[in-house]
Length: 506
Image 1 (cartoon, one colour):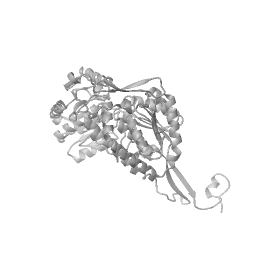
Image 2: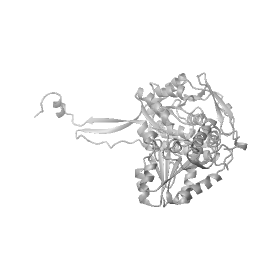
Image 3: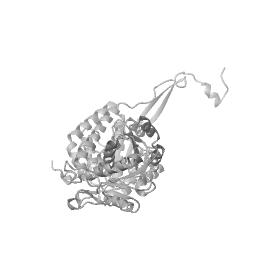
Image 4: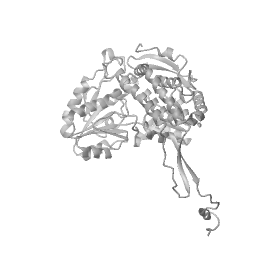
């Protein structure tokens, strides 16, 4: 297949997927999907409006009773078929993801697509493992048991940095638990979310179980969050937008799951394997051009290793190959848009006034000038309270800060509002054990940074939000727990009734 396949023909019927078919959006607005590697427009579509959200929610409502009433085995079988269809479409998905995001094809092929398919396979099995507390006679006179029941229609909003994976993370635990869903992908990157939903229909999932509305946040997103028939909102994105989502959802007393921004620390103690730490820092900082909420953004390095670490990271960053995302040798593609590139460049340019740019810090010219490229950037000398250390940049930028004592290193790592992810590097099990306990983050890696697996949860604390994606823990977000209690005595007048009326029976 041509690496830049004709998405216009593929989505000629529109970029909304409702009740099992593509359709045009009803908004007066349009949007152009742009290849960030070239700046060329590759697909134009009509945006979703409030009426499209209404239609999608109605489709999800109509599908809910039958899907919620299906046996766990039936839902599991459908999702196994879904994984098989996605496996057949893996090449298409990878190329579409690289086209709309600028990801290197090796990242799409080896990380995004297989990770998403693995998520489907995991939740296909997890659909049959909804568990509760053991049935027992906790009061002595009653048998109690727990039911886990689906919530209803879920309204989810996904970001542009991992469109396929975020679609999977939002959709899969919701439908495995028996809910139906309306997903709003970022308007910049709707292609793989639409392909994901199409594959579900092809696999035999009922129409209306998965719906996609491609629209803007202020129009489609805010109405989806506010919609009275939507029982829960799940949002992944910036902390600032997350606050707005929380305001809207709270006004209608919805359940909320928020996975928000991050500013992950990378703590290197003086007994760490220097070479491993340097390689881990470059990979962790540059994955997806740094557009990852768990990316290594702040490296705190104990002073004996500091100079050698900075030199090693600078050398490795200088060797990173920028280029065409569809070239299998490309290491780093463009950022998702020229606006995002310029935002990242602004952070670095302002940092020149108080810090040192060791390597990078520039927009490349030549063949890459038309794309949204930015060179891998290493910064030293930035104060702890500076913008470059405290704010989420979402680009290929790593700031390195020295520390002396272990206490200081952990304190500096915790000194931001965020708490999504962190890592600690040391050969000492007691040091890493302490770090795993004291680093305030939803995920702490030891001697690595970035890997995720379907079986384990992903989510943050503090300004990084609350709730979990992936793993069986995500069912805590997408099910409601019902306590059912049976009387076992057949006694007409219970002893406790006297607290309301009458006297104790003798």
